[in-house]
Length: 84
Image (cartoon, rainbow, N blue to C red):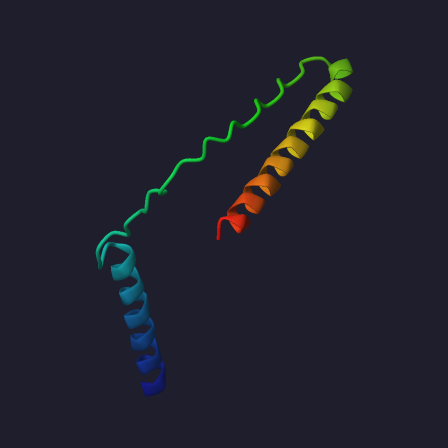
């Protein structure tokens, strides 16, 4: 009986500490702003089709969009690695 009471009190203590931390038991986290904003232009997303017969064209457009974004990301990573 005594062990159950001790275990219950310890569990309540842990829960109380977690709740206190969540409720603002410390200073709020500071958000860092990026040092520089990339000037990379992101291609516009293709318009969503409204007719079923337009789906194959939309699929090709989305595939092109995704590959363009992937190529741009690879280019950015290469530039970042060469800048080190």
